[in-house]
Image (cartoon, rainbow, N blue to C red):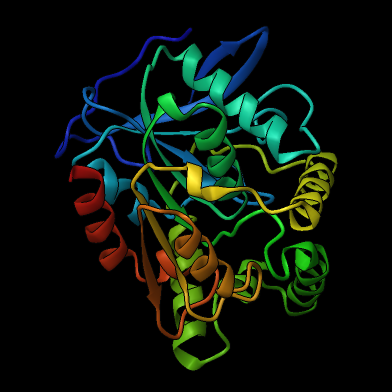
Length: 288
């Protein structure tokens, strides 16, 4: 395993220049970045469909890292991580658990966005002792409304993005209002702040594997979430078209110890659009 570099609030280490490190997980090298205090329960970030390290909003990563140790990683087969991307959420969750244990942590907080939220739910159910608190953003439960349509929604907006020379997230993550479009431009500009040692784009084969896993999750029999007793913060935009916002309401209702926050005039990327309010809320939740 690679040597960890200390980073403290107010230091020069930020998301734009955090070193990319490598850890061996059962013979497969996975890449990650760490920043924030070098003590305390870490917050493990689990990413969305077609996303590698550099698809995280720097304001969210740096914001949470002001008070918490943050670890962001590429799961198996994603970005610069080795291996073949699994075609099920359950297998992705097992890989994430193996990564956490390879770093030597006995307990972590999870921040799962979209697909990462599916993975977080499985980890909480299968390895409850490993998890302290959970943030679920832009996500929903197994069998949730419209989740099996993520592929068609994504492909449609990928085509729209190609035709208009815009990144698909301009359409997928934000509303079509003037405010939504303005916030989309700001978000996509922030993603370019890191100019050196950027991650590799997600390969087509990995993207297809993730789509297959998401489709299966959407068709899956709903899990008994009443058994998940961890404190959970559920956050989303009120107009999410990728993972319809009704899923956030549903998952918060079914989790016995959950709090729900919905951001107005916001879509799938609501936690990025309202990054200041979200980071404040997330830190309060994680520090409780």
